[in-house]
Length: 338
Image (cartoon, helix red, strand yellow):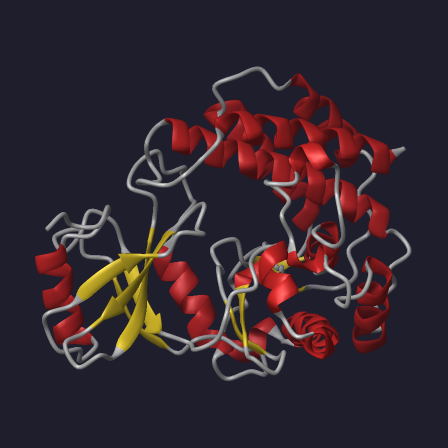
């Protein structure tokens, strides 16, 4: 039997049995939808399930894919109103596996990933999903980092400037092609950053398909915390709104979103819900939307490079579509900046 990519089955099994209490033998099945860190469903001999997360198998960027940090964030949020899986253990011992990993509870529910998934949701449940999704985001942004032990998760000021530098550096150091427009838009974004409204915990990639949803429409768990830090929470809101609704036909496969389906409401509905819950000034959201389109272009380019290098395992991936998507995102950023 072929071992799953990135898992030393014998050693990881031994560690999980000793530290989590599972009963050997264990089976590992990779989830298909991950584009960065690798995620596996783990089932023990009693049928008990859990989830394991680890970094890509190669081409890992400096300071990225920190499993211990991601584990710490989820553990800290377990005492708040933010729905997260219970954490079970983290391993940073290179003698166990070739990459750090952590284990958390398997949360029952569904990931509403694409348009087909959105259409499968009962019509009357769709508004509830939107409401719960926005409510969970507002709950995260209301958490006091000091109160949950995350005061040192990141710098409190200059979040957008730091993000711009970080993702620009990823392109400069990691891309295998010339993307001059990234630099041009970077200069325009840096020159017009809005004043940050306080400090909060920023998820960094908040959208419906990074959550597990209950059948009744509630968020059962928010996932994928690898980009979480402290900073300007309106970047999260813009990231969520960016994925809302329909987009050009040529990028349909890359932007196959459930929220384009009737019943989930509009981007305006999302903003109204969030504004009412948070009380924040949303008048400069277009800048944040431009920033998120630019940032996503940098992220997608990084994923494309890792796929090209064979770092993401055996997954279906269309590099030409990824290049087209990056170009679209950069163009949209320019439009939003005016």
